Image (cartoon, rainbow, N blue to C red):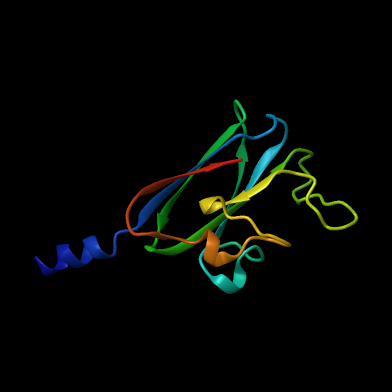
Length: 127
């Protein structure tokens, strides 16, 4: 009995991310999943290139350990696998984060985008 209880406590989770409100179906979505504050928007824990249909994108990460995570994405319309910016560093392509976190004069903060994953979960991000 102790074994089954411990197995349930260590169960890995599934996270489904649904993004809507994209400008077009052109390109792909660059999706990043982060599990540490100091690597947020720098080094992804997991990543995916996601196809866009009907100005929406959905992706599922499976076998994730329970923990704290944050999600970011870029709508890479020209498929150059990076966020395009203007001369001032302002993004030219749509982007977003979990909790619809936004930065005032720069990128969003991890603390604004983070969420706890303790069971299978679906999050919705709307532009």
